[in-house]
Length: 341
Image (cartoon, rainbow, N blue to C red; front, side):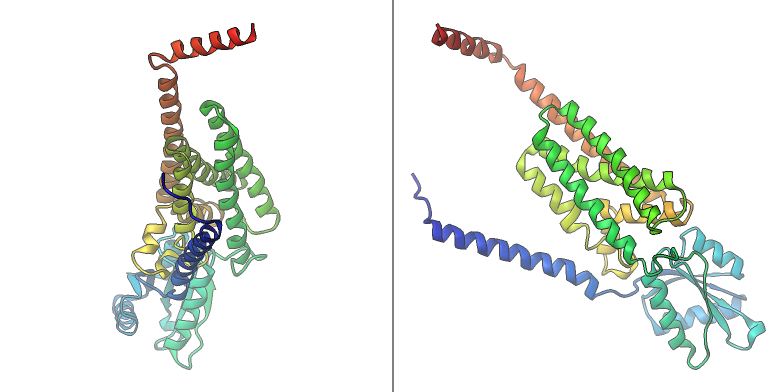
């Protein structure tokens, strides 16, 4: 039999392991934020063909790889691209205001960070000329920098994670646990959307926001509970690592996926935090525009959690119905009855 390590050694190893994990998490959470910069950021240049092409070429030359540029004919088309979440900003050339005159149209509701960054960059590009900024889809007046949106989103992730773990340990029946997951998701969506609307963090349809938050809650809690039902305690760790510790720093919540180092910004959009943030912005500020991909991603995670819970149910049911189980159970009953007599 292997000798147990002395308590002092075990305590030291545990402390070292936690510190190593802490160091890895600090690096992972800080590194994407430290390296924030535009990377193929979708923008539009509006104006005549020659003028728009000249501005687009200049942007590509001065900021190589920073922008994914599309040219359009006029400001109305550019603004429509912003409302449809096909671009974060538009450089609108206005020849009537003089040679080289242009304005910057932004959608700060998509990302206040991107709007601020592009506003500053445009002023630098224009030199001494002042560039007017038009906010086509503005952030809520009570949360212009999006700080409250980001702060309110984090508890949604944490409580969904906690609900999945709690239901896994407190409720033994898989069927009842599934009912608990659905109930939690519905209540979480309704309450959180109401609070965020009441605080002015969200605008638009309350029902759309509530449905989005409910789907996010089910995607996370269902994944945690489902993984735990299939592979036990390691499933909880795997789920927490994937949907929160790995997914949160690359979600683009505080900035935008296109500001994160490649390919992590895109990877984050296929995990619940990134998809949930994108879908909630679309539902709250853009009348659902740009919601197709994040909706399918969250639905996939939610369905996956439900299916894993079902796998755990049928596996346990098969074990309980295995040959010899009833015989063993009857033997235990008979032994108990004999001991009682």
